Length: 490
Image (cartoon, rainbow, N blue to C red; front, side, top):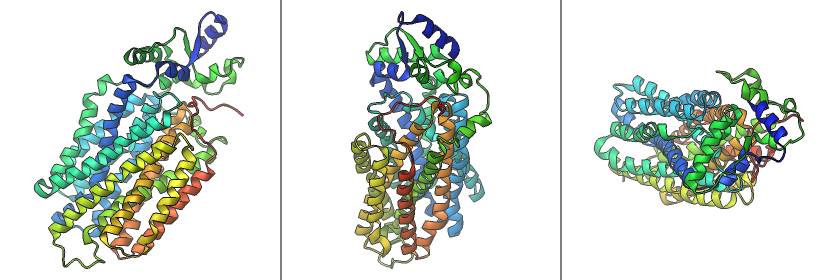
């Protein structure tokens, strides 16, 4: 199919306009159509954030009800990230092989069902199983990022992806408020049940969701992609010029023979599973440096992000065993926990504003480097115990910046990889990040619980500065650049 389009294009000459997908997206513009996609993908991000934020609240409640040890309490968080580790890669492969929509269907089904069943867990073992399965679904949430990214014109892609990512912040704030209301009166089971609702909304609206036209072009389904773009233009009140839609790398290499462009045949020979050569592209000479840098970036960013969240739980309200708590009742400590987590969740709002302001101005790399360095500086006073107000304020600032770097990293990674392997590559990168989430509650937060707050903060600072270094070593800056469809030869 791709070769046929190329032949028709070369035979037509100037008789009919030929345009690439990025040119088509520029004609369509950003309007109501992308707004609807933004709303749908935003629900997915809200669902992801709510399910993750549950970890800040249910641990203490389950520990008290079932008389768990600190290690058993930490394992509730760890199994979620273990599930995400597997789900990230599997959903990435599904989205590349069968389509972004199928990936969304898979992750939403698993997360919604497992999340709801968690609320009915009769014992500790069943809760671990259901939370692990929910984690497997959550691991595929990066599919929403890839899917939405492929609908956005290049010039302002960074800003719109920040807006898209802001739904994560909405989810974290909403979950903190929901826990504040639900937990004291109804308990942790109702919180789990209510938190599964957004995933069921995703399933309810699934039939109205279009497939990514960029992926369709890679599969040789140009007519279907063109139909989606025409619909988008109608909804946006714009006009898609008559002509022939071709792959970007064909459009950019007018005098190249079809066989000279690597990856063209792969679009025609669609297979039910990723070929080894597709997987090896991630480690090709052109991408291996970026891949390794992104792996450490996602590992460290996930470790530090969830570390700051869980650190808030450990240090809030005088709840730390290392701080005298005689003046605090247990009810007062829980109230302070909800308040502190709610306040630090609000920190992601200024983080989003900062990221949106600089991401398309100074670029993805410099944005992350600046925010990592400042976040590390904010943690310095926490090397020693501070009063609650100071601790909350410092964690507020650190979370604002670490969450912003996380958002920029989630935009940057899909932009680095070509469409043909984007889902799989980002899924694998996200999976590496989940390892950081698995280790964090077992190592860093455990240090705080054992009154080693200084060592925990030093660990966070080292990891954060390591993330900044990994960004420096990454070879690509993607600001303002069109997405790449296939990896070209040297």
